Length: 261
Image 1 (cartoon, rainbow, N blue to C red):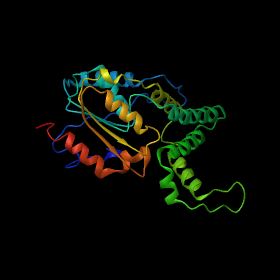
Image 2: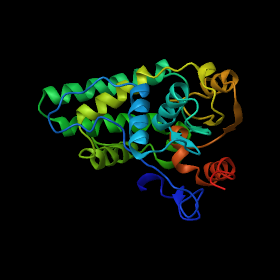
Image 3: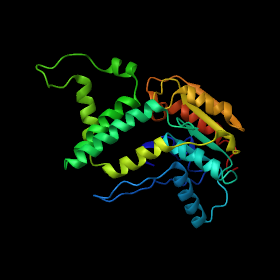
Image 4: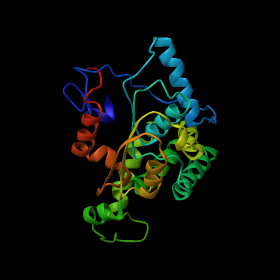
């Protein structure tokens, strides 16, 4: 299952030999040249409900989501409190933090400027470079990269070489319209924790700058049925949900221990 294959596998934390898993992508799937659309995490939850209806699924053992997927899980729990037996939400809170919105706003302006200049892929690459600096921590970048200066002005520093490589690798993975739509959707995200009656397991990381741990603590305090709140350190910031395999895997195994039995 792509980027989360370590978690979703036979005998893995989400055990495909025991559990039936529905994985889905988020709307919109925009064609080249299409305009961005306004879509909320509640809209995504409603689309998932339509899919579950179509498949004849009356009840799911768990809705597991990380980052934006966790936001959609919270919105799903608010709209459909009886459809999932539990929510497992990693690195996602009840709102978008203003500082994270500021960073994403700059990314959106990069995308719009590049599209207007007829260079959409360059815009995706540059916006991805900026995004990478918000996913990780200053401690990790300080450990990984020297501060060696280039031979002349305009040259790339070691950390810039890394960012440019990550940006170039991503330039054809999405379109500006899709990025704009989903980025804006993150910043529109807002749920009322007290309205979620589904049991919730929460995981937050103290180094996450996109979803600050204080927001996760507030969400945990306001949820009516909080099964577990795990607050953990990590070198990797928001990307901890991708990098801290052992920690996240243990939490998933514990949450799903009785599911499907």
